[in-house]
Length: 210
Image 1 (cartoon, rainbow, N blue to C red):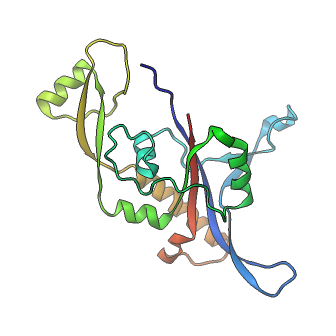
Image 2 (cartoon, rainbow, N blue to C red):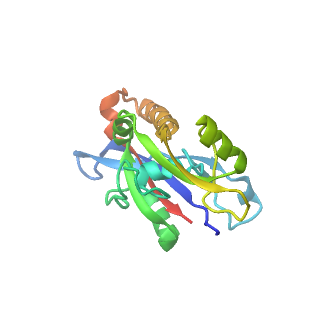
């Protein structure tokens, strides 16, 4: 059985108070909070992007995908932070253009604020897991109750058997730490003091592709 891999595409946005052109009024808008670096290959090939975006947290981590939006939940028992909510209507232009570029190759679009991530993690949730374990892992699991650090969902190798277990879900912690750091950096740049009341003013917008 062959299962296609799944990746995440995650963008950072933060809410900024901006003046309205031609008016003395102001309004808050979501703008890009992503970081970029110069692409040296642009000097060689014209069709290269001038700048490359630095992913905040783009590793392939199915526990994280399950936790964020129920994607790759092989047990169908995990309560995610939220079911996919789609790309927000007030997303910044950069995110909207990226969504258009991915077109139908992207799926399970959603967004979550730093507050939502923190609130979910504070509950100390467990996660149900299921996977095929190797003969060595089966002995450790069945006889010594040692939980596996890796497993697979499909294989042609002999001796693998499926097991189910429960584990602590800490998959959000690295993401929360990175987004918290980004919030401090962005708001310090804007000469704004940062505190927890700003946790609803920074968010990730994301989708997946197989």
